[in-house]
Amino acid sequence: MGSSAALRSHDLTLFVGKTTLSVNLAAYLASLGQRVLLVDADPQPTASSYFKLDYQAPNGLTEFIASATSTEVISRTEVENLDLIYSDDPDGKLRDWIRDAVDGRVRLKYMLARLDEHYDFILIDTQGAVGPLQDTAVAAAHLLLSPIPPEILSAREFIRGTVAMLERLKPMAYMGAPIGPLRGVIYKTDRTADAKTIIEAIRSESFLPSKGAISILETVIPSAVAYREAATRKAPVHQVDPRQAKVIAALAVELFPSLLPIVEKTERAGSRRASL
Image 1: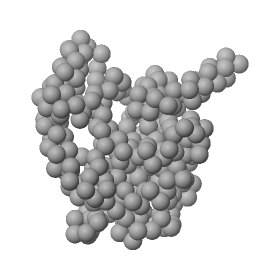
Image 2 (image 1 turned 90 degrees about the vertical axis):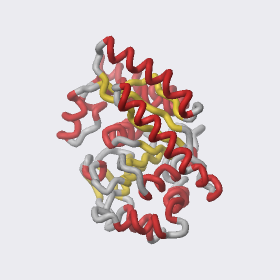
Image 3 (image 1 turned 180 degrees about the vertical axis):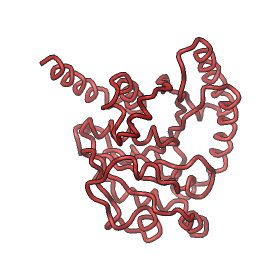
Image 4 (image 1 turned 90 degrees about the horizontal axis):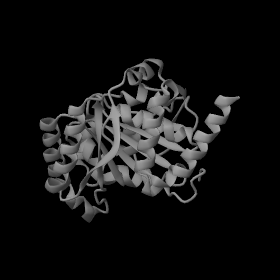
């Protein structure tokens, strides 16, 4: 285990519903000395190509799930401590396999459990569309993180859709895959007073329809050009813009409070280096 000995990886598999969040949170956790695996479960493999690779495994997610093997499916990125299982299913064949297999929707959960001792965090990046591949990603995670647009009508639609998904997947608990709690993060906000009003409205409206199943994080992801710049450079945003580094750090700590001492230690070390 890494520097967070109190944390257990089998409790720290995180479903993330936005590639920008997935890759930057994964890279930030890795920068803290945590061993991180990023699983690209999106047929459009944006996360797979975000960072350059030191080593590309012969196989990716299809082999990992359908053949139930963890051999030759894990690639290494150039980001220290960050590994990747890349998406290799542009034609949707894995989606069909998951739909038709008896254990299709829970296979990923049990395959990731085999990697329990190797990683401190596992992040699953997935598509926005509802379907078998998203179901298996949700079932595999212990915590769900989804971006919410800072626009009230879109946010209401998100809440309705998410509540429906959680209800639909409740029977997964009978297969040993209970659905984890969902955290919503307000995404791409500006600094206007109107945005603040909308955020408060979303927080107040999300509780009742979901009966508390959805909670809205205090951390807010701003609309910032740094995320595009980071993607162009194939670099983590915390290396590109110190302001966004603080945002990603706040998100990590809010999701995983046990990380706070590590984050504070890392920030103190960074401040000392900057003053030299």
